[in-house]
Length: 425
Image 1: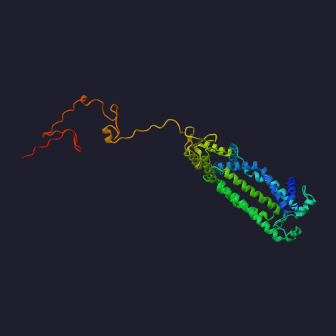
Image 2 (image 1 turned 90 degrees about the vertical axis):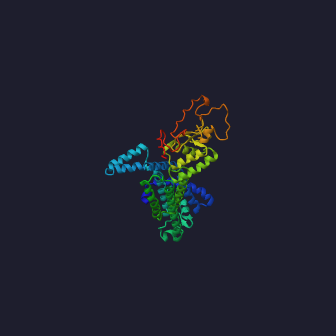
Image 3 (image 1 turned 60 degrees about the vertical axis):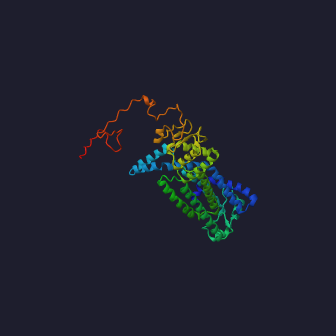
């Protein structure tokens, strides 16, 4: 580890200078030789580094989502060229180039932190061995060796012997209890961060090998922290625990306000956004406007949660517009169906079909009980001519028995009937 740390010795001077500046501030409040002054200096160093790494963190989020989107295409390439590894690599690089995706972008925050981590380890190791390093002179070195956090010196390790710990002015039990608690907290925070990413911020509609890799890392990383943590000084454990807690809080904020499409976090976010927009009738934040704009632009490609969001706005008399705003009022809004096609809510009313009348109403010439004007024409009557102008009906044919039939009875055949034979008396 010392060999690896020495490779980053070029940054130990800036790191030690930042720690000393923070120590001057906290030393004036808590005392220069206290663990609070040195411990808070390390915590402040972490916060300063993580603030500077926020742009890289944003790139990491975008790269991770882009990789999730490309997983189906990557799987097809692997299956198509499974016997030709060189062609498979070429097609993968071509896919990355066409989509503008860089797989290494998801590792940028970790890679950017590595120099600071090893530089801090080198500084604390120098304090443990009694060597000055960077801008830490003899007086600051003596002050740092006296600093204890809950009874454990900053430079002490879990694996140190009792003689080494006694030289730092502490007991072996105090050091191991404090370091064990910090290692457990460090591993637990890493596990919770990875689990939060897997359970809330992953598109559940797509099953890809990427999800299995993330699930494996959820268990591998905490074990790695526990194994390497026993060889870290207490000051480095403070650094790593602080950065894990920062990552966990930063990820919770991102998942809540900018979730992955198709994930459970997006369903919860759109539900909150629907309540907010229907209550106020507009989108207030710029981030919300950006998300609404992206949902409208998808059209027919919206997922289940996004269609539910659009339908919720339509039921409330609202409609999402292409610029991300929301318009109220049926005469002004252009509502959208589930498939993304616009539907005009204003304009001329729909044509109504006439109500079907009963037989008695048709015979009486109108609805029952409704007065009818004398000169009002009706379309239900067969003719408007007077009855005396109609041609006379043809006389009915006589039957052999002398009976006259005006029309065929129900159930009897029409046309000429065979006469009945006269009965014999």
